[in-house]
Length: 387
Image (cartoon, rainbow, N blue to C red; front, side):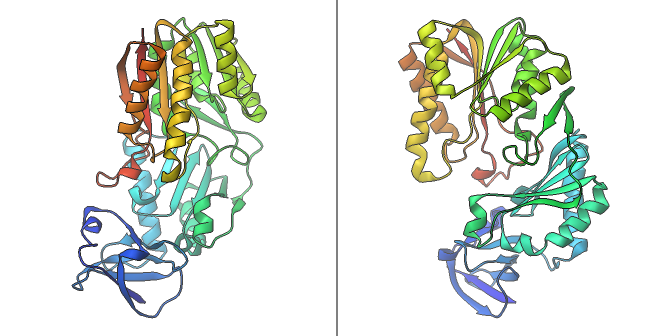
């Protein structure tokens, strides 16, 4: 095995449950191994820290997943995945949820989502890629799924020297995958949908909006397949879902039909354009929901991302009737909580609105965060009263 020795004091954050070691934090490497294999990690003064997968092609040289003398065999993966799943069951998840959330479940580079009787696997590190067959065997034994689908299409893979890969790893993907969320039925497009097919991290937040939508005219921007729209449709006067993707808005209407809702309509167009058109028409809403995709995937783009968030929030604030609600969120961890709230303050000022925070949430409980790792708590969700 490789033996990796860190520079002086670089071990401190690793003892606070962080797991990623960058190449510039390493003093020297001894021994022999292979790329993607387990490497022992030691502090500058030779104290054992743990074992993790090494990749000389990546800026993240080692991803620690073992802190004792365990080995990464099938028994190890079975235990880790089952422990992660047991936690979700313990806190009330049943039909659809995130089973494994990377380093938050002590399996960095691995995400597993459950959609009814189908599983979706997302692997972003070389070490996990080399263990894929073992992982699939564990999933078959723990869940007995109809299908295990691989959806590995992300920038991180190229940085690990991996190619994108997608398709069935086990079984056959059903023609229609329907989940039950918050008492609603939802179509999930595993093959062509965003991320692993759906945004599970907003589950509790989608449920919470029902408090604000009763007998209201609701505008759901960046609706994707209509998770927020369906929750609003339960008790609202009307819901208008807007998304640039025709495939997404088609599924919105399928979901409305599936749940028997007659008060849902869609607009397939760019959200920024639609909001500007509504401003010209002086068309107002009681509730506007903003759930955009991440406007930035790197620190260097944060300034431009904040401009995008600001533009969209100002437009929305101007289209809300006095006393209405703006429900706004960001899923980019590069846009911190402080930056996002500062942007909202500036947006309210420029829109000449008095705003109050009625509620604030983060991601669903099946996406647990590590207290010492800021990146693992990424979702910001605000309910604002607009006057």
